[in-house]
Length: 422
Image (cartoon, rainbow, N blue to C red; front, side):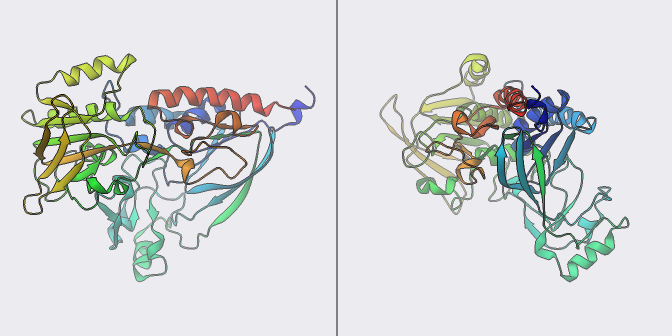
């Protein structure tokens, strides 16, 4: 035990999404110094971009705000945004981690007044809304951002616009002298919770994503339905902003396909059923058609699934669309599919098509900076992640939010145990 007490009892959590936040809070509330390193300028991950959870259909900001309150009140938690881990060396109980911090160009004096954004003129694509809108070069990541601090895009640094942005701030919060910097953290264990990203629908050429204006992905649909989204919560056609009366949800868009993602993400069926309720709540006269291979919504979600499917405005067709074509003059999108129940080839027109793309682990493109084994799809193999490095949430396998939180709690316990290893 004497040797164990010499180890470092602090824990690093990489990723500030729901898994990372949960793991960090659990570890800190157990008495361990905890650090969160997050690549984005805000905490909350992809959950912060969601409109509602299933099956209760409540907004995610409620759960996030509770976590943010716990972070603010706990002196054992420190977090770094716009940061990433460059290297991990050492062993359980004694890791040496190098972190790179990218300049935000706005310091802690920021009050969130927004005067810098008023002075900005350059418009840049808004990744928070998945490119459905643009934002100023000086911006707040989103209206519930934590920390509530503005960011200035590096594209305008050194320009006359940058001087105008700096002059507009009465608090001296805009700081263009900020430079990238690195620093070291000494920790006893590392929890890797960098989450997931949606599969690139542009790779599915026959669905025409990026070419067909009114073909979007399920994550984009989430932002269209959100009050904080680009349309203020109104589900509208991207091509012309007109009302949407009919939507086709295409399941397994790239998933369970040896040419794209061979696995099932497990949550896409439920996501489409949930998004069907967005449409029908907005317009009682609208209709939704779900093209599916099979609906995977079992266990505690079965009642929710049945309730949506029993709505007479919802049609389910067993079949995977082979082609999606948009009429450039009307914006209507034709979906061609073989109905497996009847054997007939169907061609139906819709105002909007939503592709249910799967979950790709962040580690597929951004592997851990350590000797960590992943499977052929980029998911971290828990038993081969390396001593003292614990994967959590969607970097291990596709899971829903509730399962991510449960897994994060387990990861926090494993990390605590790892700090005591001799």
